[in-house]
Image (cartoon, rainbow, N blue to C red; front, side):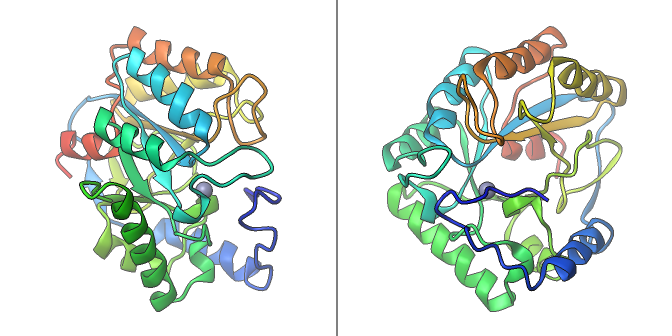
Length: 261
Ligand SMILES: [Zn+2]
């Protein structure tokens, strides 16, 4: 499973519920779906950054903008402006800049805890704490969309989150096409350790063929990325792949508007 080691948030990912967590994640793929049929042939791509490192907010966002696109940044309040093993969390000023320039601020859990480790009231507290933290930075931020920390969904928390958010994103790779689950959006890694330029191109070709919605997820954007991030070169390749195929580069919120969700 997707782990950070210790970036100052989760040296102690709870192990007690790992088995239940995997089962819950697996069941979440199949239960409590929010099915939505995509309109005919409207391929598009979203670039999402989790947590988010300062390099994603700086270099990553600037590269998206220079290709006419905007990204979604799923933030956990406890990581803002904090140092970690792999990167420094983006600053409050960076959040304001992202929001005002047209990027989307999305929601993680405040403490970056996994959904499978939170009961209903603990999840509610995490979401409300994150919301009030981020709105304290910029009051016009609207948290419409959620991403599961570590990509690990919970069959129990899924219906709860569906009442709060328009969508939830995991890290199950593949293109969202035909009838998609808004509460378990697929996302493919834009992570050098996991994919190369050919792999990126294959996802784009699949999105064009299916008329689907391709979502990438990643973290830092630097020349020597962490095991969870990408180089500017890989991001540039993906952005050019979108432009070449005339695929709009849109936030998750904008993509949902375009598909009428
Ligand atoms: Zn995260």
